[in-house]
Amino acid sequence: MPSVPEIVKECEENMRKAVVHLQEEFATVRTGRASSAMVEKIRVEYYGSEVPLQQLASFSVPEPRVLVVAPFDKTALKDIEKALQSSDL
Image 1: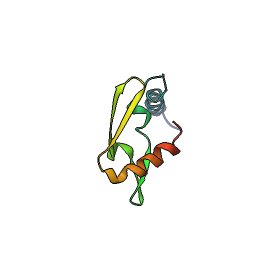
Image 2: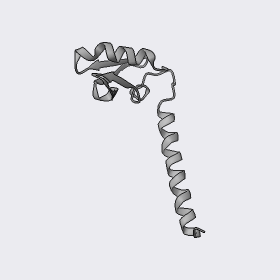
Image 3: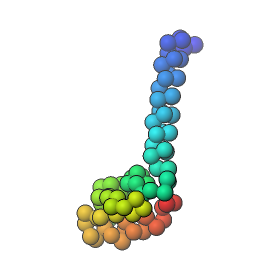
Image 4: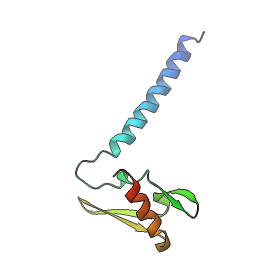
């Protein structure tokens, strides 16, 4: 049977994980404003492997309702477009 300090430590770890997860979810909540957090978790099929979109493009928000995705490599444009269209944005 685990001791009380062990139980407390395990509970604290679980609560910390829950808070981190909730913060990540809140970061992607759509508020009517464009945010790079909306596309951070999107993965792109690129040369046979799944790559995070962050590694293939930069993001900017020039206007509140506009998110610009600029690929580092222009050949990845079709793959990025496909991933964005198939996401649940």
